Image 1 (cartoon, rainbow, N blue to C red):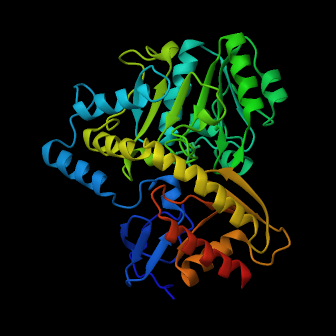
Image 2: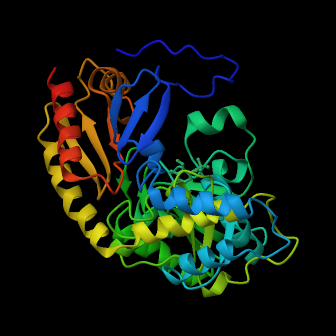
Length: 386
Ligand SMILES: Cc1ncc(COP(=O)(O)O)c(C=O)c1O
């Protein structure tokens, strides 16, 4: 059993790290420093959707890194222009503003909405997670994450995740409503078509921007390229990140027509955003995750995985779509979900995630083959049965 990681210890303890040092990854597999092989159903929290070190990503990154790594946003580069075109044409049809992460993509979207309606309020719903920087954190109404860092940004309103509550919160002062179509970090909760539609109608009525945060649920994770496609409700602004860089840091705001001119020079920016290496990786990722056959496999196998999860000992509820799934464990189970995740890693060589004391989250790579997926579920079954 790998439990002893002998590394320098100078990192601020901001993360509860598990006692494994990973040194290599390929597809759905990871290897630790002692040579043990693992199956990964966590994918660096929905980042490695095309698997670890996908050959097309490695090739694109290597070739680009040999030509040009950074030049900044005062010039054009082809990878950024092409990735922007690809993202916009596959979704909202407007334009793209690049960032370096999910939280930064949300900051940019919130600023665009506020600029369009200055002084306006931002509505978000409980259980949301939009990131850790101050704007995104202010739209993340979770006491444990917000309280130590108060005061937050003014003008944010949190309401219950229901159609009625969202409708009631939106009025002529509202600049934006920000929603994850499927809430990830709080345990994979679908907001549902009724809520999304109510938000769309309220935003239309009062000239507010509807922002969908697809940082986690976008890019094929749910078996559609964009999660909003399941519900037939389009936002004005959509944020993406996580899987987009194949493991490299990149985020983006995609706009519809209305916000295509959402910023002008001087409004907002970032030194690194939209760098050619990240964008070259993004183009390779888009090729993989846009494949309709892959998306159909994720939808269909996702349903089978959900059904199998529901039959596992101690699982009382399964939530989610495609390869974004949560298994809710019986609250009286002696072992918590984080303890289970630790045992899965060390005993079964299975990489999982817990979003809370009773919630396991599964985020398999979209490219995982059937045999590996079945093997991973067999390991989970052994674990839950033990
Ligand atoms: C829906 C959603 N939005 C935003 C973020 C923040 O992304 P990042 O950690 O890249 O800042 C996350 C991260 O988990 C997320 O799941």
